Image 1 (cartoon, rainbow, N blue to C red):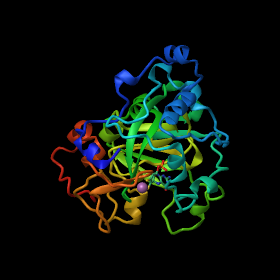
Image 2: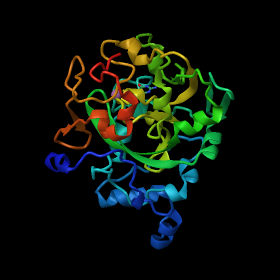
Image 3: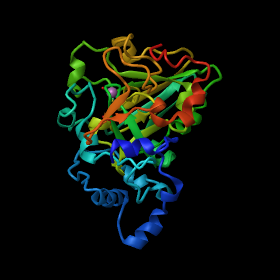
Image 4: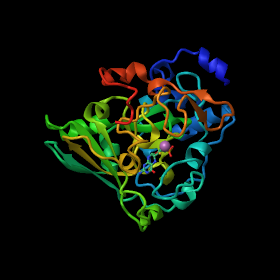
Length: 334
Ligand SMILES: Nc1nc2c(c(=O)[nH]1)N[C@H]1C(S)=C(S)[C@@H](COP(=O)(O)O)O[C@H]1N2
Ligand SMILES: [Mo]
């Protein structure tokens, strides 16, 4: 799809697959005789000349496709809400940022391929009434897995459209009952230099940590992702569980989470420690606020030749602009 056509489409809300594209998986399977979310997506991809990889071999603690809620399986969608094609599985898994493994985006998959994600636990605590450590399998059982097709915009000005599998973070937070003085959520990635060679160097403030204001964390667009393209996440994309906040720059979407803490004050994060002048706590996508070293007005959609325009809140203004009423949006680096 060329940029002109893209610009003529009114930018609206999220790329959550439109209701009418959700089919009962059972009905759909009966009608075409296919056998699973992965196959359905594979079929959708084929129509668009893409081939989802079938070479994933990393042991995963639980196959998300087994718990993928049938009624929420997007059986036929192969584009986002704007008609923008979903990025190929090869590009989503082959071009990633995961500094714990390597800073070379195309090498992360190879360096991370033996990363052990089983067993895996996520400790949720801090200012909550019911602190609890969840095994990864518990999370799959407790919360039905949905597909969410979201645009994803890295602060480095590249982007993708990704069909995530996951569940709203709000569901998990409600389970532990935040106390009334909880105002922020802090997330932490696993610290394990034996498995993550990048952590052997002390040039970065390990472990990777991120944070959200509680209302941002409770927003329905904010998910914990456990898969993509109907399959469990591969290590390079943050297996077994990572956050996705689609209206913020990609670095907010922290990978391989082991700890979630509800706290009273705005936390430091990995990137606010690395470069406070360049990376802010809010980090909302904003084409009018340039990075000190480059423009944020356009983005390179991986797999495409022509640049696309970047949208305020990555195109999700309708859903999230209210969260920032009264805030100066040009001060993105607070
Ligand atoms: N723990 C951890 N999480 C991370 C990163 C990282 O280096 N370590 N990189 C971030 C950045 S900069 C981006 S753009 C996204 C990339 O996600 P993707 O590989 O799934 O596209 O992950 C984010 N989460
Ligand atoms: Mo990024």
